[in-house]
Amino acid sequence: MVQPSKSTATQDELQSFYQDLAPNSLGALWTVQERTLVNEPKSKAVAHLWPWRELRPRAMKAAELVGTQDAERRVLMLLNPGLEGRVATTNSLFSGLQIVMPGEAARAHRHTPAALRFVIESQGGYTTVEGDKVPMRPGDLVLTPNWTWHDHGNDTDEPMIWLDGLDLPLVNMLEAMFYESYPEDVQPITQPLDSTLGRYGSGVLTPAWQTSDGAHSPLMHYPWGKSKEALLRLAPDAEGSPYDAIILEYSNPATGGSVMPTMACHVQLLRPGEHTMAHRHTSSAIYHVVEGEGTSVVDGQRMDWESKDVFCVPGWAYHEHINRSSSEPALLFSFSDIPVLRSLNLLREQSHPQDYQPEG
Ligand code: GTQ
Ligand code: FE2
Image (cartoon, rainbow, N blue to C red; front, side, top):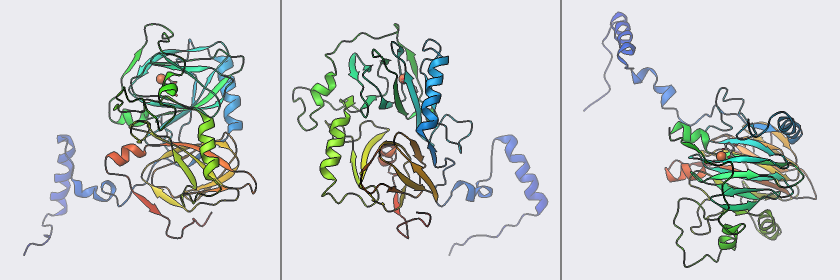
């Protein structure tokens, strides 16, 4: 029979043993066991809400003060108060508010972090992705996957403001960051306008003469009209998810999978008065309120949101959502690192033992 053994060392022996480890780049795992092999995750990131009324004037001020010659991207970073010193909105994801003024271009470049844009304010304007000019209207989702050339332009008379989502903190953690400037300010347009929408926009009918087995969706543009229509059609009759109500994933039309290998995008509808049950999962997410007003309770903290606000939900934090209106639906866009956790077999989910948090 084998069994755990007793320690035999004196205090002096132990102390000199421990003291000699660090200078030799060594450490005793058993002294940090509880800190290292924790029972469950506890994110340093905290739940946080960025109200639109605080965001917009500061984006406009940035546009007044700084040109796009000096700011490669004019982005107000949404920095998680729990992650001081890091460029991160949750542990793995970055989000920011980008503004492009009338007549401005944001120079062409590419990088290994993948990006997505959810348009908040725009009368037109566009992002060019690999020679494909993608128009941007409020509510549209536009992808600029890993290592694709992209530049932004505003040829309208009104400011363009959108929410950026990037897997930057994850890519930095993996030390896989590469960046390159395009040799010109703006890349040439080589495709018919919005060509990926033309080819893949139907969602169910995909070109049979082309193979699309790439790592990311071949569709760069998910217009708002289709997303909203799909939600509204389901809302009256569908049961939906107990945790997320009527929730739809933006999918890769060629595979049915997530839009990019590191980030998934969702849009959801909370019916008037609807209050979802609380759950938590190892993935983290950033939410943008497209329409409506409500409350999300995250880790016991209430966050009252309204149209255009942004908030984050750290990994393994319990959360539930409430639509405070008794007559109007609430529509939320979100992006998450679900595909990363899923592909690594690390995606776990748990419902709240009382169904709702006490604060809810
Ligand atoms: O629009 O290309 O928020 O490269 C951060 C990095 C946006 C962009 C960000 C970027 C971009
Ligand atoms: Fe970029």
